[in-house]
Image (tube, rainbow, N blue to C red; front, side, top):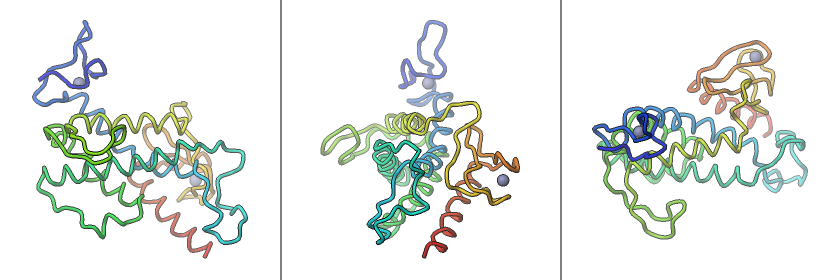
Length: 233
Ligand SMILES: [Zn+2]
Ligand SMILES: [Zn+2]
């Protein structure tokens, strides 16, 4: 099969033709997509820093100390993109669960805090993109960029998931060599906030040089947020 990534195929030949492989997406495109999909957990979390928290939730009408620094640009796109990441990963999670005969997510779980739903969806999706790309059609309602009911092939889902990561990189301003500064999150080793930098291969502290794997960082931010929530209450 000719790789459906077409001119964006990661393994085009000298004349620019996409690779041929056993699945609708070639090995190289699937491998690249897996990295992108795994990164969505961090994207989702880091987009949070670009979203101003509603002061009404605090009840005092004053900006809270944990709010985004006023000097940081607040990107309205960040909120939409965060919602879209949540929507798309959980929608395809359902499709993959069905295709791979995994237990379906109950309604109670769908009401989980969105960040946790994204972590779980990525955990299911990332190692199963091969399964997803072989799903010939999935019925979707309100799929981003469409109105109402539509039928989307699994390989399109893989490409859309990877594209979300590219958009997030744009919104987050990633791509610089020193990585993007993660505002507001404490280093698990030295405890100092806003010293962590995120790059393509993980997270490191600019103060004590501690390095964190992506999965460890994802776990840590949830812990850190829970601790902060406790302090604020
Ligand atoms: Zn390809
Ligand atoms: Zn540190």
